[in-house]
Image (cartoon, rainbow, N blue to C red; front, side, top):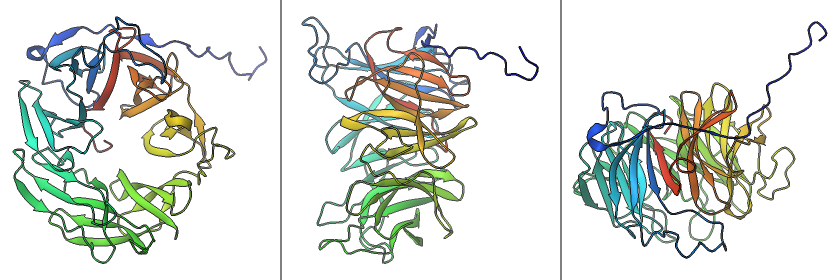
Length: 394
């Protein structure tokens, strides 16, 4: 080999390794070790199928088998917290910041109640809600419950205690002149502020305003209004991106184009994270990406949850010019749902076409290796939902 020539590269793995974790009970959870990198996952014996595919007659269905909530450590050891009965249709909505409770709501409908589960004991508490609940930050001492703008009335944001009693109604009708609350919000990691998006539709129902987002303290005081990056977009917050900025998603007022931006909280100039995406599948440098819903910063790069045709989702890596490159994870289907990032790794779920999800997988982008933590080939069935232990990037 000539001097200075690169060494032969190691072939990329084509399969995912399977963890050799064990299964334990709720009484065996090593709570002193539970923290960043741990996961909550809903698993059932039901095998997801592509739309139109018929399951075998003897296959389990959501109406005949229950769904188990596992607490999973980074190595794949799993602990059974509880099992919901068949047909319960409860989806994992949130994990309290202190790691002690998980929140569930009915899937596919606007929730009228939520179930909070004590992860130490398995005890379940039903909480009346009227909207979409999340635990408050930093520790989950209460719930924030939101509704969206419905065409006639502004969205609402309320704080209630863990029994459902009202604590505070955020003022969402005018928000300091910025307009009606649209329904999207992001809470700061310390719980002292929220950024709210407006229903900035620019039509006969909702007039166009220059300010599409509002920073509000947790006592309802409007701290400042933030301008949208461009004049004809509607923007909503996704999450805190840095201590001084939020990640926002902006879509065109008329059309299918969208873009992610970093928006300073103190009035600075917004910075585009991604290039403008037309949503038409034919943009150069986007490779079938028709829009991005979230992003995660890792030492090996910035990664995105990208949308494809027909309801599919996949993982992309951000390029230096704001475009995206599709990432193929070894041993995982082409379509994946990203759960989050921790310790330089991404937690993903393999997606069956535009249908349900199967295995819970830990992916190391730097090494291009993956490890199945739950689901096929370890337990069969499918992991329908998962959450990482709460962090500032959650």
